[in-house]
Image 1 (cartoon, rainbow, N blue to C red):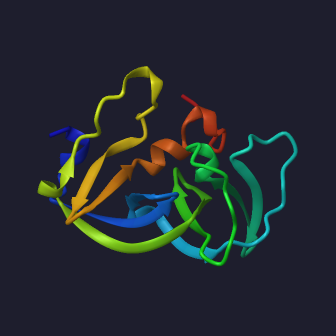
Image 2 (image 1 turned 90 degrees about the vertical axis):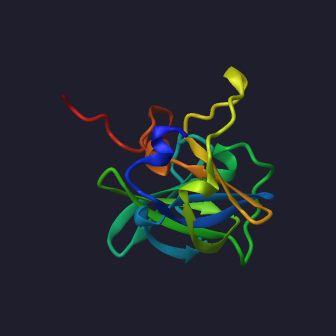
Image 3 (image 1 turned 60 degrees about the vertical axis):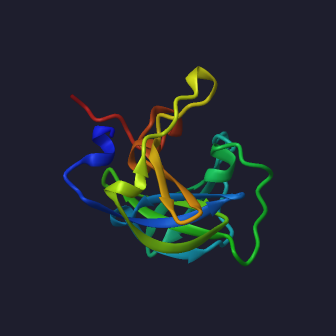
Length: 159
């Protein structure tokens, strides 16, 4: 099993959310809060997946639509659409998802390595797959994704 999945943790506590027909899981410790989707203020010349910003109790928070970032169909915004507010790299960022299903704990024997897809599919942000009964949950390294250069959300750390 991959070192990233093993870590020192025996169990992983995840927030599970839906994007299209797939379920994804992120480390629950990165989650600050879950909010309904509200209108955002657009930013000129921002990439399409950056919907804009919101004012969250005096803090300006960028909002990323993961459906657009992961190229999962045409996003629609309804009463089930939520924004997960995250704390990553000492920064607050929001991600738009189709809905949040639950919080679950996965034991190490429920975790599998992500399959290799070659250069056609970027799996750099996929930690692995979690299996619970008939459910397959894609584990996302949300900090690695949000701090990646193509997201342009976090300044490069000065050496």
